[in-house]
Length: 78
Image 1: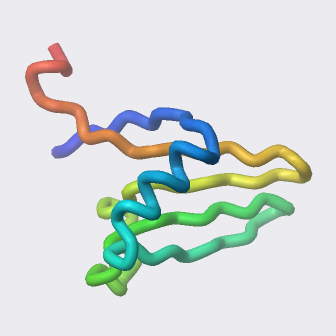
Image 2: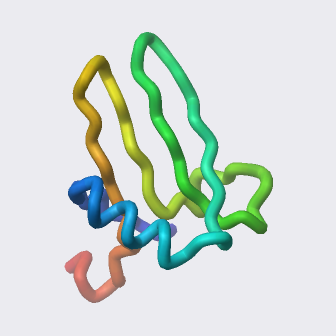
C-alpha cells in the first residue's frame, strides 16, 4: 500500500507545477455542500482514479487552499 502526504502550497507554486506538466494533466471539479474540490490527474487516466491524483484545490466560500500529493518512501515511514 502506498502512502501519500498532503502538502499545502501557494497558488503560484501550484500554477507553476501544473504549467510544467501541461498537457499531461487534466482536472475534474466536484461540488458538494458548498465546497468545490478540483482534482488534477494524468490526462491518460480518464477514470479520474483518485490514486493517481497529483494535486487538488478546495474552495469553501472565499477561502481557497492548494495542495500537492507527495508519495512517501518506505524508509521515511519508520
